[in-house]
Length: 151
Image (cartoon, rainbow, N blue to C red; front, side, top):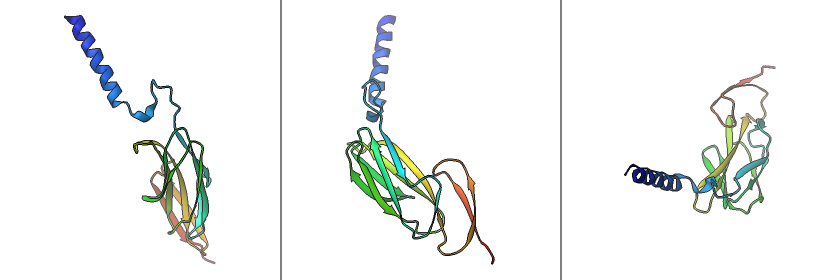
């Protein structure tokens, strides 16, 4: 009787693991992992408001869609092949920290991987002194202090 209960418990545990494990994990399937690589811009770039930069990124592994986000707004959605590079022009609209995010999605819309870049938008045409405080990490919370330098 105890052996039968133990076998039933093991079977239930295996079934739960199979149902709960995300499709994208590749655990036990020998599938390659998925990664998003942001090629440019470099981390911690500071740009004047309105100055455009080239945002280049690609996916490694089997993802079907790449989403490009600026702060909390979706900028683009592209169907992609493994290794395909995508390029967009982007410019900060206001003087503050911005978070650029690229998300890789699977065929069913499952989030597979994310990469982020933090960009500081600077006031256009004014000399400034910047002090940035906050948690370390690509797009963690920041405090940005901008002061005009008197001439």
